[in-house]
Length: 123
Image 1 (cartoon, rainbow, N blue to C red):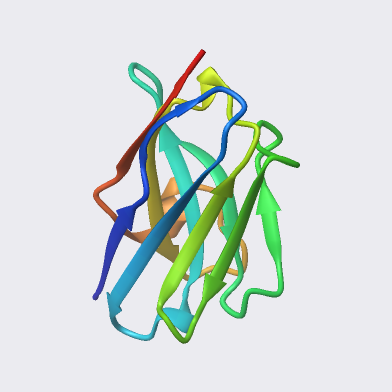
Image 2 (image 1 turned 120 degrees about the vertical axis):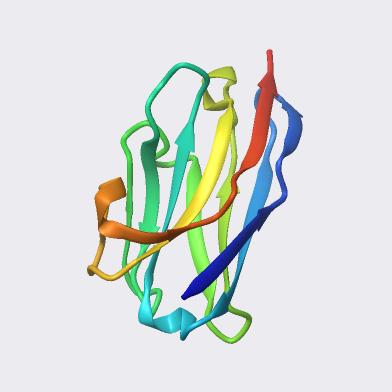
């Protein structure tokens, strides 16, 4: 069992930056690839970024590529999402998740989810 808790959400102006954190507890954090997903009102949850167990590989959705950076610190059991050049369309609840595949991008590939943190980007 893995428990995930996101933090760092809030209100930010368009063009600004924000960093999300996801703290994990329970079974070995470094055993899981970690992903960030987001869900806007009335829309399905969508993939944003993923990082491998060791942190040596990442993959991004086209919509965030070049603006968002995922990283992890296995000593601190924490994964981060640095978001730059934010746009109003980035407004969503952001979720972190733990999965067993190398670079999972589908929600079905993740076994554990956090409760989410709201990010609102004003224009």
